[in-house]
Image 1 (cartoon, rainbow over the protein chains, first blue to last red):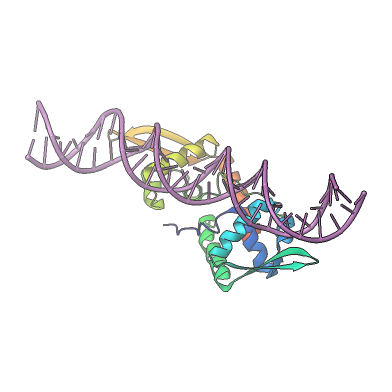
Image 2: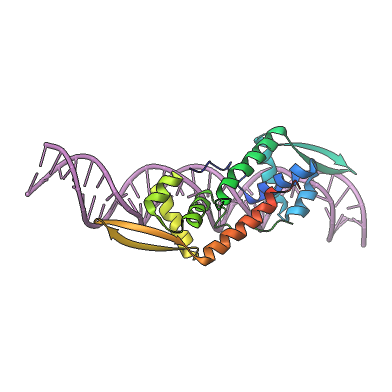
Length: 96
Length: 96
DNA sequence: ATATTAGGTTTATATTTTAAACCTGTTTAT
DNA sequence: ATAAACAGGTTTAAAATATAAACCTAATAT
């Protein structure tokens, strides 16, 4: 029987964001924008969801007078991501 | 930049079904029911979608007076599944 | 002064997922 | 022989998601 895929991570854009954050450790909004190619609105929504889940920490400040949002994955987020990887591996490595 | 995940396969239940079909080669409706733990309605809908996409072939006959639906993955389905695996690997193997 | 750009957020729409209700026929119990 | 329960599904309707369009605030450029 298959284990459930964390619905928060089983989303193309949120998975992309988490994938970026897990290797980069801290990323600005515009970096996520460039790397994912998604729209600002979409990214904004997904960041909020990941933050609400405690998977990432979001910091808002100003740089050169402009707003600046930076994201950092949390231990909980790392754990969730690793678990997701383990679970989905059970779906896609069925040809041993 | 991330490649897009085939939306037809980026669905927990459809991915489960395809994962089963790729190793089993032919499966009955009730087998999918047991292995996935999903409801009949949900499975019925997803089978139809996979069939409409040409990812699986569906055969309906009778066995012991009862209707019997069997599914078989197509070459196109195998290709799509393998591509999905390759693409999502780019999401989850970012720690090389 | 006005237009454009930076950096986002909110709102609305479109799509999906999911399960409840339903359907057709069969077997079992009464 | 009739009713109740079961096999094997399909249709539907509600709920949840994803996505982009529109919007906002303030800063810079013309």
